[in-house]
Amino acid sequence: MEYTIQTDPRLPCNHTYCIDCLQELFMKSMQDETLMPPRCCQKIIPIDLARLTSKEIENFNAKHLEYSTKDRLYCSQPTCSTFIPPALIVDSIGICPKPGCQVKTCSICKAASHGNFDCPKDEATSAVLATAREAGWTRCYQCRAMIELTHGCYHMTCRCRAQFCYICSTPWKNCQCPQWDEQNLHDEARARAERIPALQIPHANNRIQMNEYVQRMANQLRANHECEHTNGWAYTPGGVIQHLHKIKSHLSIDENQPTGSKEKEYVYLKTCTSCHIIDVRDLTVEIEANFRGEDKNKKPILPYAALTQMMRFYFDNDCEIIVRSSETEPKIK
Figure 1 (cartoon, rainbow, N blue to C red):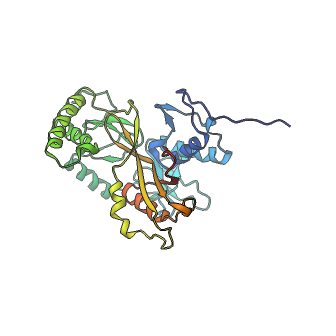
Figure 2 (cartoon, one colour; figure 1 turned 90 degrees about the vertical axis):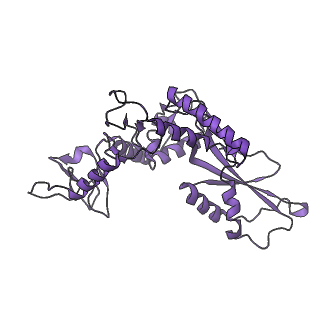
Figure 3 (cartoon, one colour; figure 1 turned 30 degrees about the vertical axis):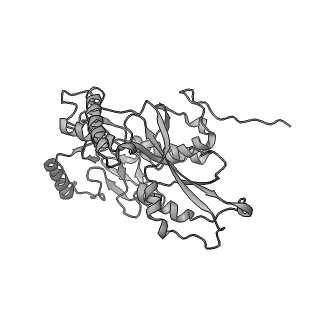
């Protein structure tokens, strides 16, 4: 009998990726548009490396088509909202592909088909566009999503991955518009400085360091205003650890927990070493439980559900909870 030893796949960027993690990345990309298509070092990962099932490949290809469609159309039936592929849109009318639905939707106003009548003026959309013009918002030229710039440069990257100028909505590097507003650039520099835990302590020296860092970061932004996170990511505990302590009194701990037990929570944050932004998509919460004497090898009873619910409240993403012994090193995900 022959056995096949499956090794972890090597990606186009020459990195080796854990097959379980790679499959999880492909699954997440079907739920999070910003992860589609899956990449490593900005290079697309071929789907065959993930070793997905035929059904998973079918679902992935369907989502990839949806996310790559510029002006998407969804079923106008509120209880359905299924994506309608461009191939099913004829003469501005799309037919829902979901079995048992097949509702016709107008691709112009995105509402139900008007039958033999012309598409009326969409007053609601017109009102939103009027508000957008007054507020200075812009729309993605590809997916038509509405975007508001609060800080940073005029180089916009939509969640559909389209890159364009915020001022004129033209695809990036195809216009003569300025690349940033000085106040927005300064706000972005301060936002990056405020992500550094060491500068968040209210102290006179820290305020001086903060101002110096903001000025230095502003100068860097003028030369390189768009951080692509190419300098790597750091995994560090902290940042939101205080939130765990704040809700400590609200967590339900089993009264039969061994006497003398201690709990220490670690929240490992994946932080860009350049702009210090936190990537919360793979946030990991680790809980260390120390026990003395005869109770050392017993498993602690910990409030998994409460911690997970709390992390979703603060970060709006699922986090993994790992229980480990104090005798082992933290597991970095």
